Length: 456
Image (cartoon, rainbow, N blue to C red; front, side):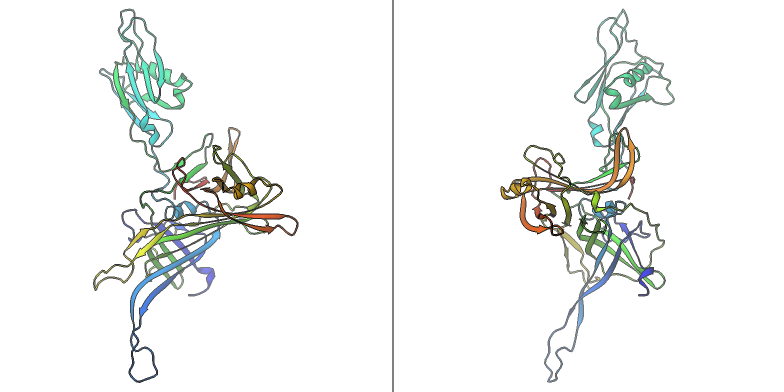
């Protein structure tokens, strides 16, 4: 290889059903320093032919690649990496709101109902047009659980008089229902037609990719990676590494063995992340094109936050302020590679992977001006710990300020404690928390990333 200054590290996320099928061109320029190194297992049988040589023959029997990279914690790159280590199938853009068209008999009375929040929750909403079977009954909207009941207006003789536009206006004015759904005419209908009673009909088509816009947010996007506990949905990466002026290498089926977040407020380095894993043996192949590098915001250790809760208190309720020195969170995937016989035309690489059980270990150092956390450790109290690595502001909307951040929730008691000191002036505790399954949360840890991007 030539000079390090010209090396790049690129990645593409392989399709869930086609792990090992290379992605070309890659979709992301990873703002990390790293390598993809070819690895081989070689068989050398010992032989004795009356000479002082231990080996006479050898053969390559398996091959793969090892990759590692590190750099600043990057909230733009991180969602792609978390698809390969925490939860797959979180692509970003693509979420959809549930909808349904209700089209009574007659003309100009078809209405489109749409959930205001995208995601699968909208599929639980239903709409029913109700004939009150009474004379001179007013138009009235009612919400019972997730069912929106439209009680239609009738005249003195009991005939329905509500037109589609009346329903649109009533929905817009309702203080609760207007926050749940919207209602509009279905083109080319004009809304002047009288509607009829219609049976309960559910909205459908709501899809969630675990990326949401927080309340009051406009540009802000929150990515949620809750590990799937009963199946393997992790994806793989195609990596490209090398000097494009000399040779770039391609390696498919790269799955991450571990990713580590680290932040030390007592030093001058920023918040960092490091990844390591394995993939297919690299080929001397350059990408068809190189994506642009995104200038992600950098995280400052002094902006880190910590919450430690226990009992019935929800996670993120009790802050530990003015005392946190550092935090390190290594997250393993539990991935193991399998070399299976593939015949004489095989590439001697692994052909499948499996998942083993895994846990994360959050290591947190903080000063000890009181015994609160010490007592929790000594009592082996089950903890709900949230560590948030913060970056710069995204926006301020509706009185709420949103920041770029990476957040790790981990459940479980502190497994170990070590005394330390902070610059020779105060004692510190390093507590190590091994994640344990929490039945209420449905997982033992969770990672969230907040940024201003909704695509990988």
